[in-house]
Each structure stands twice: as C-alpha cells, then as structure tokens.
Image: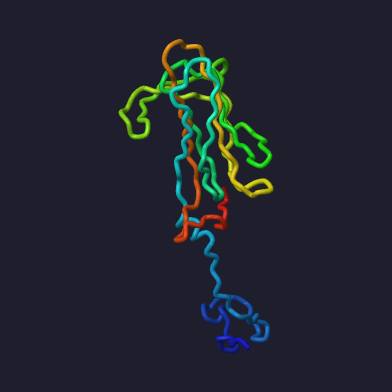
Length: 203
C-alpha cells in the first residue's frame, strides 16, 4: 500500500494563503510510481548520421544507352534527402533518370527524371571524389520528386535497388561521365553493427 506523504487538514490553499478547496485524504489517488523512460529517441539521436551514396556511369560514348545499379543501399530505414546528377561535359547527356526498384518483383518507380528537351543544366565548380576542382554540369530537373523513405520490401524483405539509367547525345568524339550523388539520413550501426530495429523518427 503506497503511503501518502502529507498531513491531514492541510492543503495548498493553507500553505500559500490562497483561496482554494481542501481535499480529503481519502480522495487522493495512490499508485505505484513508474520509473520508466523511453530510450528510443535517445538511441536514435545518438546514432543518427548522414551518408553519401554515389552511382557512376564512367566514360560513356555518344548515342549510348547506359544503366548502373547501386550495390550497397544501407540495410536500415533510410531517408533519401537529396539527389544531384553531375556530368563532366556540357550538352552530352540526352536524358537520365534515377529509379527505385523492388528487387523481388522488379517493379520500378522514378525518383528523379531529366530530359535535355524540357530541363536545363548549370555549370558548377566541383571536386570529383577529392580530385582537382573543375567546371562540371549539374542537371536541373523541372519537376522535383518528394523525399523518400527507403525500407525493406517484398517477400524476401530486402532493401530496394537504386538504378540510374540514361542515354548520351550525338556529340562526336570523346566520352562523358555522369555521377548521381545522393544524401541519405540513417541510424549508424551499434557495437555489433546492427541497425535494423531502431525506432523510426518522425521524418
């Protein structure tokens, strides 16, 4: 039986000389004190990090269709925050898109689409993987896709694949390299490397 630590006949009104009502000792609610704290938010905030993912189509010739799949999507609930496609040569990409694919059914949905006939590109000073800073060309899509939450899917409960596909234009001699850079937010691994099962934040 919990003990009520008070003195009968005294109330807050009595203590502070305020108008109020006296509550009978029999009307007080007695219950066990629960010393429980939800650690989910604490664990997530301590382990939350951003990670850069990259898909590369290297040295592609003219009038060529290309497709590259990202091989290591983090096996944990992952928020895709930003997508940037950067070419090392201007006006050599005809169209390009980034797709999310269910690896069980191979169904796909586009996350980013760019077409030279309806979209634009802009020059940027950019370092490719720590190399010398040089002029490159960022593909600017007219239609922006919403951020995506990537999670296990399908019968096999595997992470979806991220695929970049496109086609180069007829530019003659030489090649073009296209990079798709992505920023994701995800929980980092614990001491044993496990990340599956951490609480999903409100994003």
